[in-house]
Image (cartoon, rainbow, N blue to C red):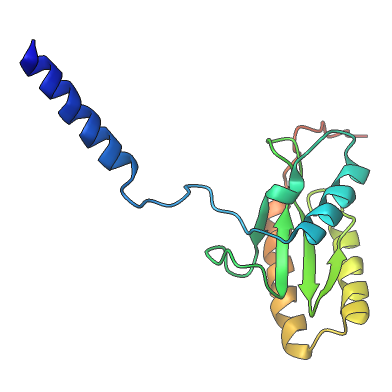
Length: 153
């Protein structure tokens, strides 16, 4: 009986040690400031009547392994497979949230990027970098339906 108790204690110690082995979050996201999170939540919920929690699902589109919030272009989406990804640009304290989603309105995303260039006064280097990033985003979104049925004429 004592042997079993000692084995149980050792097993629990091993499990506890393996649980605390220093591995990070398997699904890391960019932590955005509360003021930005509120704006993202409002922007996403205008296009979706469901509670999406989109402000918690923010990813850096240029460097997906960088989880610090700084100037750049980001994607955000609601929890679950039926919420489409949208993008926003944060530059020098200014926020530009794209109203259109790339999966069904790629032309509108490009038009909105033109507006973002003017409204944020982006540098030529930023324009080139963000253009490449948006192109990659649109390629990834091409063919996605997010559970919406395609209607063919």
